[in-house]
Amino acid sequence: MRTLDARNLSLKQVHQILKLERQPNKSFTDLLSLETLTSYEQQELDKIRNNFDSYYAEEKISEGQVKFLFLSPLLWLSGFYQPSIKITLEENIADIFIEDEDTLIKGRMDILAVNNTVQKASSLLWILVIEAKNSSVEALEGLPQLLTYTSKSLENQKSVWGLTTNGLRYQFVYLQQNNHPTYQLLPELNLLDSERSLQLLQVLKAICKIQHTSVAA
Image (tube, rainbow, N blue to C red):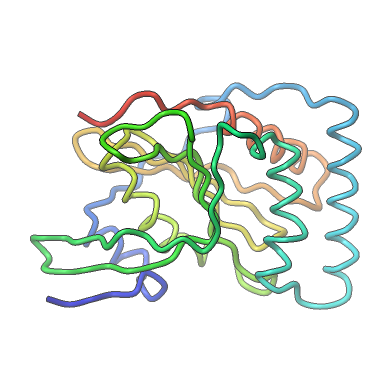
């Protein structure tokens, strides 16, 4: 049996090993109900954007800074910090064993948000998985890791959201378990672009409100 680190997997390997298939892209509004932001939310978002701009102008922003200075306030502003949602950091995934590939995959998620109120078969239902990179790395480079981690949740639920980001660019993915696991890439969002940063917060708020009450058969 071979053991693989999720950090070293290519997108092609993820597709082959996990039998994961990419579907045609959809828009956010096909999947989520986006609400108009309040003036307070827009003002707080401006502060996060300006803070990022000042750091980005000086030097490379580390992965830790991306998580602490930008993802953390974005998650707070979008409503993830509440008793019904549990957030864990640097969480080891349960080993993923692919029997027909005789392969074991190990890895560690940067940020995981789960529904703390709905539980099925001793497993909390996942809302959002986040893979963070430093600002000099393209956000999409985290896609193979993100898909590997999020696909694990499809054993207990029908769908899950994922996000890979370098602090500037935000790439959301939506995974579903139908006859086989599939995923869609959503339009890339950008924190320094006024319009797309507003949509970023709208998307996070909408995902936060999702209650994964259905599980895979």
